[in-house]
Length: 324
Image (cartoon, rainbow, N blue to C red; front, side):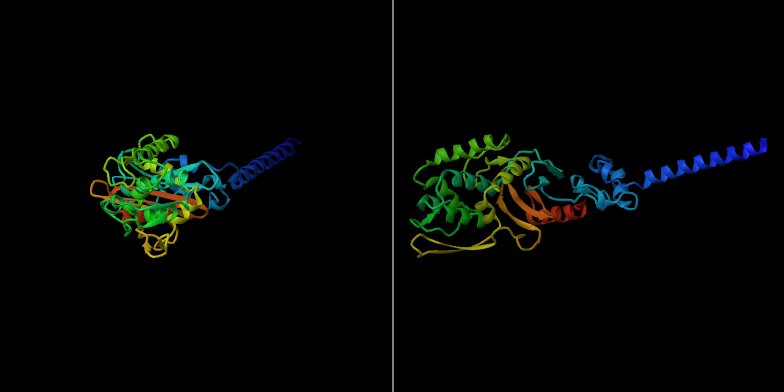
Protein backbone atom coordinates (compact mmCIF):
# COMPACT_ATOMS: atom_id res chain seq x y z
CA UNK A 1 0.00 0.00 0.00
CA UNK A 2 2.82 2.35 0.96
CA UNK A 3 4.48 1.65 -2.36
CA UNK A 4 1.26 2.49 -4.20
CA UNK A 5 0.89 5.78 -2.32
CA UNK A 6 4.48 6.71 -3.08
CA UNK A 7 3.91 5.92 -6.75
CA UNK A 8 0.79 8.12 -6.95
CA UNK A 9 2.53 10.88 -5.01
CA UNK A 10 5.45 10.91 -7.45
CA UNK A 11 3.06 11.00 -10.41
CA UNK A 12 1.25 14.02 -8.92
CA UNK A 13 4.59 15.82 -8.38
CA UNK A 14 5.59 15.15 -12.01
CA UNK A 15 2.24 16.47 -13.28
CA UNK A 16 2.58 19.65 -11.20
CA UNK A 17 6.12 20.19 -12.52
CA UNK A 18 4.96 19.70 -16.11
CA UNK A 19 2.14 22.20 -15.63
CA UNK A 20 4.59 24.70 -14.16
CA UNK A 21 7.01 24.27 -17.09
CA UNK A 22 4.15 24.69 -19.55
CA UNK A 23 3.11 27.99 -17.92
CA UNK A 24 6.68 29.30 -18.07
CA UNK A 25 6.92 28.43 -21.78
CA UNK A 26 3.59 30.14 -22.48
CA UNK A 27 4.72 33.31 -20.72
CA UNK A 28 8.05 33.36 -22.58
CA UNK A 29 6.39 32.90 -25.97
CA UNK A 30 3.59 35.41 -25.27
CA UNK A 31 3.61 38.29 -27.84
CA UNK A 32 5.52 41.28 -26.54
CA UNK A 33 3.47 44.02 -28.24
CA UNK A 34 1.17 44.34 -25.25
CA UNK A 35 4.03 44.91 -22.84
CA UNK A 36 6.95 45.84 -25.08
CA UNK A 37 9.80 47.55 -23.25
CA UNK A 38 10.44 51.25 -23.73
CA UNK A 39 13.37 50.56 -26.01
CA UNK A 40 14.47 54.18 -26.26
CA UNK A 41 14.89 54.30 -22.47
CA UNK A 42 17.25 51.34 -22.42
CA UNK A 43 20.99 51.63 -22.28
CA UNK A 44 22.81 51.38 -25.64
CA UNK A 45 24.02 47.83 -25.06
CA UNK A 46 20.53 46.73 -23.98
CA UNK A 47 18.86 48.36 -26.98
CA UNK A 48 21.31 46.82 -29.41
CA UNK A 49 20.46 43.43 -27.96
CA UNK A 50 16.74 44.09 -28.34
CA UNK A 51 17.14 45.25 -31.94
CA UNK A 52 19.27 42.30 -32.96
CA UNK A 53 17.26 39.52 -31.26
CA UNK A 54 14.20 39.65 -33.47
CA UNK A 55 13.48 36.07 -32.46
CA UNK A 56 13.03 37.16 -28.83
CA UNK A 57 11.07 40.34 -29.51
CA UNK A 58 8.98 40.46 -32.65
CA UNK A 59 9.82 43.90 -34.08
CA UNK A 60 6.74 43.85 -36.30
CA UNK A 61 4.47 43.47 -33.29
CA UNK A 62 5.82 46.46 -31.36
CA UNK A 63 3.32 49.35 -31.27
CA UNK A 64 3.81 52.46 -33.41
CA UNK A 65 4.55 54.54 -30.32
CA UNK A 66 7.93 52.81 -30.01
CA UNK A 67 9.13 53.90 -33.45
CA UNK A 68 11.54 55.14 -34.58
CA UNK A 69 13.68 52.82 -32.46
CA UNK A 70 17.44 53.28 -32.13
CA UNK A 71 19.79 50.62 -33.47
CA UNK A 72 22.88 51.17 -31.36
CA UNK A 73 24.95 48.97 -33.67
CA UNK A 74 25.15 52.00 -35.99
CA UNK A 75 27.44 54.75 -34.68
CA UNK A 76 26.64 58.45 -34.86
CA UNK A 77 27.97 60.32 -37.91
CA UNK A 78 30.92 62.68 -37.76
CA UNK A 79 29.91 66.11 -39.07
CA UNK A 80 31.68 69.46 -39.41
CA UNK A 81 28.75 71.61 -38.25
CA UNK A 82 29.14 73.50 -34.99
CA UNK A 83 25.56 72.64 -34.11
CA UNK A 84 22.98 70.21 -35.46
CA UNK A 85 19.65 68.72 -34.53
CA UNK A 86 17.53 65.98 -36.09
CA UNK A 87 13.97 65.30 -34.97
CA UNK A 88 10.98 63.38 -36.23
CA UNK A 89 7.30 64.02 -35.72
CA UNK A 90 4.04 62.83 -37.18
CA UNK A 91 1.49 65.13 -38.77
CA UNK A 92 -1.17 66.17 -36.30
CA UNK A 93 0.95 65.17 -33.31
CA UNK A 94 2.87 67.41 -30.91
CA UNK A 95 5.17 64.55 -29.96
CA UNK A 96 8.70 64.82 -31.31
CA UNK A 97 11.67 62.49 -30.99
CA UNK A 98 15.23 63.80 -30.91
CA UNK A 99 17.32 61.51 -33.10
CA UNK A 100 20.59 63.47 -33.16
CA UNK A 101 21.83 66.40 -31.09
CA UNK A 102 25.05 68.38 -31.29
CA UNK A 103 25.21 71.68 -29.40
CA UNK A 104 21.59 72.36 -30.35
CA UNK A 105 21.24 75.10 -27.72
CA UNK A 106 24.27 77.12 -28.87
CA UNK A 107 23.51 80.58 -30.31
CA UNK A 108 25.00 81.00 -33.77
CA UNK A 109 24.50 83.22 -36.85
CA UNK A 110 21.82 81.70 -39.09
CA UNK A 111 22.42 83.59 -42.37
CA UNK A 112 19.60 83.08 -44.90
CA UNK A 113 17.61 80.74 -42.68
CA UNK A 114 16.36 84.13 -41.45
CA UNK A 115 14.30 84.37 -44.64
CA UNK A 116 11.88 81.74 -43.33
CA UNK A 117 10.77 84.16 -40.62
CA UNK A 118 10.69 87.02 -43.15
CA UNK A 119 8.36 84.91 -45.31
CA UNK A 120 6.09 84.16 -42.35
CA UNK A 121 5.78 87.81 -41.31
CA UNK A 122 5.21 88.95 -44.91
CA UNK A 123 2.56 86.32 -45.57
CA UNK A 124 0.72 86.97 -42.30
CA UNK A 125 0.70 90.77 -42.64
CA UNK A 126 0.56 91.46 -46.38
CA UNK A 127 -1.83 90.39 -49.13
CA UNK A 128 -0.08 87.76 -51.31
CA UNK A 129 -1.48 89.51 -54.40
CA UNK A 130 -0.30 92.98 -53.36
CA UNK A 131 2.08 94.47 -55.90
CA UNK A 132 5.40 95.84 -54.65
CA UNK A 133 7.62 98.15 -56.67
CA UNK A 134 11.24 97.15 -56.12
CA UNK A 135 13.42 100.03 -54.96
CA UNK A 136 17.01 100.86 -55.87
CA UNK A 137 17.95 100.22 -52.24
CA UNK A 138 16.63 96.66 -52.45
CA UNK A 139 18.32 95.90 -55.77
CA UNK A 140 21.69 97.01 -54.42
CA UNK A 141 21.46 94.88 -51.29
CA UNK A 142 24.68 92.91 -50.78
CA UNK A 143 25.00 89.20 -51.41
CA UNK A 144 22.70 86.86 -53.31
CA UNK A 145 20.05 88.47 -55.46
CA UNK A 146 17.26 87.28 -57.70
CA UNK A 147 18.16 89.53 -60.62
CA UNK A 148 15.53 92.10 -59.65
CA UNK A 149 15.27 95.33 -61.66
CA UNK A 150 14.81 98.81 -60.19
CA UNK A 151 11.12 99.83 -60.29
CA UNK A 152 10.09 96.30 -61.34
CA UNK A 153 6.70 95.37 -59.96
CA UNK A 154 6.13 91.94 -58.41
CA UNK A 155 3.48 90.49 -56.12
CA UNK A 156 4.25 89.53 -52.53
CA UNK A 157 3.77 85.90 -53.53
CA UNK A 158 6.28 86.21 -56.38
CA UNK A 159 8.83 87.81 -54.06
CA UNK A 160 8.38 84.93 -51.63
CA UNK A 161 9.22 82.47 -54.40
CA UNK A 162 12.31 84.46 -55.39
CA UNK A 163 13.45 84.89 -51.79
CA UNK A 164 13.04 81.29 -50.67
CA UNK A 165 14.04 79.43 -53.83
CA UNK A 166 17.08 81.50 -54.84
CA UNK A 167 17.73 82.92 -51.35
CA UNK A 168 17.44 86.42 -52.82
CA UNK A 169 18.54 89.17 -50.45
CA UNK A 170 17.00 91.89 -52.60
CA UNK A 171 13.63 90.11 -52.54
CA UNK A 172 13.84 89.94 -48.74
CA UNK A 173 14.60 93.65 -48.61
CA UNK A 174 11.78 94.47 -51.03
CA UNK A 175 9.27 92.64 -48.83
CA UNK A 176 10.45 94.40 -45.67
CA UNK A 177 11.21 97.85 -47.07
CA UNK A 178 9.20 98.47 -50.24
CA UNK A 179 5.69 97.42 -49.22
CA UNK A 180 3.19 100.27 -48.66
CA UNK A 181 1.83 99.22 -45.29
CA UNK A 182 4.71 98.32 -42.95
CA UNK A 183 7.84 100.39 -42.36
CA UNK A 184 11.20 98.66 -42.40
CA UNK A 185 11.66 99.31 -38.67
CA UNK A 186 8.25 97.86 -37.86
CA UNK A 187 8.90 94.84 -40.07
CA UNK A 188 12.06 94.00 -38.11
CA UNK A 189 10.10 94.45 -34.88
CA UNK A 190 7.49 92.00 -36.21
CA UNK A 191 10.24 89.44 -36.87
CA UNK A 192 11.32 89.62 -33.24
CA UNK A 193 7.77 89.74 -31.91
CA UNK A 194 7.08 86.50 -33.77
CA UNK A 195 10.00 84.84 -32.01
CA UNK A 196 8.27 85.54 -28.69
CA UNK A 197 5.01 84.11 -30.00
CA UNK A 198 6.78 80.92 -31.08
CA UNK A 199 8.78 80.70 -27.84
CA UNK A 200 12.03 81.10 -29.77
CA UNK A 201 13.75 82.60 -26.75
CA UNK A 202 17.29 82.36 -28.15
CA UNK A 203 16.60 84.04 -31.52
CA UNK A 204 17.15 87.62 -32.66
CA UNK A 205 16.73 89.33 -36.05
CA UNK A 206 18.62 92.43 -37.12
CA UNK A 207 17.65 92.32 -40.80
CA UNK A 208 15.23 90.40 -43.07
CA UNK A 209 17.83 88.56 -45.16
CA UNK A 210 20.39 87.18 -42.70
CA UNK A 211 23.31 89.24 -43.97
CA UNK A 212 23.81 90.58 -40.46
CA UNK A 213 25.84 88.39 -38.12
CA UNK A 214 23.48 89.65 -35.40
CA UNK A 215 20.77 87.38 -36.83
CA UNK A 216 21.33 84.56 -34.38
CA UNK A 217 19.45 81.50 -33.21
CA UNK A 218 19.88 77.90 -32.11
CA UNK A 219 19.15 74.62 -33.82
CA UNK A 220 16.38 74.10 -31.26
CA UNK A 221 14.68 77.37 -32.20
CA UNK A 222 15.08 76.65 -35.91
CA UNK A 223 13.07 73.46 -35.39
CA UNK A 224 10.25 75.53 -33.86
CA UNK A 225 10.41 77.94 -36.80
CA UNK A 226 10.22 75.36 -39.57
CA UNK A 227 7.46 73.38 -37.84
CA UNK A 228 5.41 76.58 -37.74
CA UNK A 229 6.22 77.46 -41.36
CA UNK A 230 5.12 74.00 -42.49
CA UNK A 231 1.58 74.85 -41.38
CA UNK A 232 1.39 77.22 -44.37
CA UNK A 233 0.55 75.34 -47.59
CA UNK A 234 2.11 78.15 -49.67
CA UNK A 235 5.43 78.23 -47.79
CA UNK A 236 5.54 74.46 -47.80
CA UNK A 237 5.00 74.44 -51.56
CA UNK A 238 7.67 77.07 -52.20
CA UNK A 239 10.31 75.30 -50.09
CA UNK A 240 9.58 72.08 -52.00
CA UNK A 241 10.07 73.74 -55.40
CA UNK A 242 13.30 73.07 -57.29
CA UNK A 243 12.67 75.30 -60.32
CA UNK A 244 10.12 78.03 -60.98
CA UNK A 245 9.38 80.89 -63.38
CA UNK A 246 8.24 84.30 -62.11
CA UNK A 247 7.15 87.17 -64.33
CA UNK A 248 6.83 90.85 -63.42
CA UNK A 249 3.33 92.31 -63.11
CA UNK A 250 3.49 93.69 -66.68
CA UNK A 251 4.87 90.39 -68.02
CA UNK A 252 7.98 92.06 -69.49
CA UNK A 253 10.57 90.61 -67.10
CA UNK A 254 11.06 86.88 -66.53
CA UNK A 255 12.93 85.29 -63.63
CA UNK A 256 13.99 81.65 -64.03
CA UNK A 257 14.51 80.42 -60.50
CA UNK A 258 16.66 77.47 -59.40
CA UNK A 259 16.75 76.31 -55.79
CA UNK A 260 19.92 76.74 -53.74
CA UNK A 261 19.02 73.43 -52.05
CA UNK A 262 21.36 71.07 -53.91
CA UNK A 263 19.93 68.02 -52.11
CA UNK A 264 16.43 68.62 -53.45
CA UNK A 265 15.87 65.87 -56.02
CA UNK A 266 19.16 64.19 -55.10
CA UNK A 267 17.97 62.48 -51.91
CA UNK A 268 14.55 60.90 -52.58
CA UNK A 269 13.12 61.38 -49.07
CA UNK A 270 13.78 65.14 -48.97
CA UNK A 271 10.67 67.24 -49.52
CA UNK A 272 12.20 70.70 -49.17
CA UNK A 273 14.14 73.13 -47.03
CA UNK A 274 16.24 76.29 -46.93
CA UNK A 275 19.93 77.08 -47.18
CA UNK A 276 22.10 79.86 -45.81
CA UNK A 277 25.70 81.06 -45.90
CA UNK A 278 27.80 84.00 -44.79
CA UNK A 279 31.46 84.12 -43.83
CA UNK A 280 30.47 84.58 -40.19
CA UNK A 281 27.75 81.94 -40.13
CA UNK A 282 29.39 79.32 -42.32
CA UNK A 283 27.08 76.87 -44.03
CA UNK A 284 23.55 76.58 -42.67
CA UNK A 285 20.89 74.20 -43.89
CA UNK A 286 17.43 73.12 -42.89
CA UNK A 287 15.56 70.25 -44.55
CA UNK A 288 12.34 68.35 -44.00
CA UNK A 289 11.88 64.83 -45.31
CA UNK A 290 9.28 62.09 -45.23
CA UNK A 291 10.25 58.69 -43.86
CA UNK A 292 7.50 56.09 -43.51
CA UNK A 293 4.86 58.71 -42.79
CA UNK A 294 6.95 60.73 -40.34
CA UNK A 295 8.50 64.14 -40.94
CA UNK A 296 12.26 64.16 -40.42
CA UNK A 297 13.70 67.64 -39.84
CA UNK A 298 17.43 68.33 -39.94
CA UNK A 299 19.19 71.56 -38.99
CA UNK A 300 22.91 72.25 -39.34
CA UNK A 301 24.57 75.53 -38.35
CA UNK A 302 28.17 76.64 -38.77
CA UNK A 303 29.03 73.87 -41.21
CA UNK A 304 32.07 73.61 -43.44
CA UNK A 305 29.98 71.56 -45.88
CA UNK A 306 26.25 71.94 -45.22
CA UNK A 307 25.13 69.51 -47.94
CA UNK A 308 27.55 66.79 -46.87
CA UNK A 309 26.61 67.12 -43.20
CA UNK A 310 22.89 67.11 -43.99
CA UNK A 311 23.18 64.09 -46.28
CA UNK A 312 25.10 62.20 -43.59
CA UNK A 313 22.42 62.95 -41.01
CA UNK A 314 19.54 61.90 -43.26
CA UNK A 315 21.22 58.68 -44.36
CA UNK A 316 22.22 57.90 -40.77
CA UNK A 317 18.66 58.52 -39.56
CA UNK A 318 17.40 55.89 -41.98
CA UNK A 319 19.92 53.24 -40.91
CA UNK A 320 20.49 53.97 -37.23
CA UNK A 321 16.77 54.02 -36.49
CA UNK A 322 14.12 51.43 -37.23
CA UNK A 323 11.03 53.16 -38.61
CA UNK A 324 8.49 50.33 -38.74
